[in-house]
Image (cartoon, rainbow, N blue to C red; front, side, top):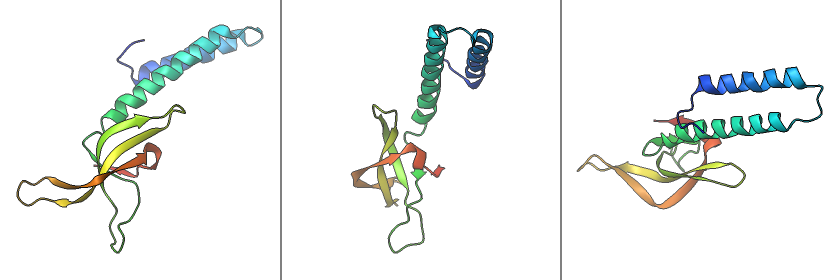
Length: 123
């Protein structure tokens, strides 16, 4: 499998799968099509993971509001985790403030897991 997956190569794989299906839809053996679809799924997963890795060390919001404030909670992303059912979670620490001394985030000690589909904003 190639490491440099982009949208154009995914698009060509989709067209190839569709063309194969249209040419062979009356056949009863779809082993080749299944293999093509599995390869397409792997390529899409790789592209998705490549894009998600880019949020590490960035700040995200998931829409939760800080208690007693009119501001969204912000989280600094440390890493990502995937589950067997292909869900992707961001492993984060909530940003409590910014240090005036060294201009760095003051982070909560407790880890927070955010489902990637719940991310509303990435900074």
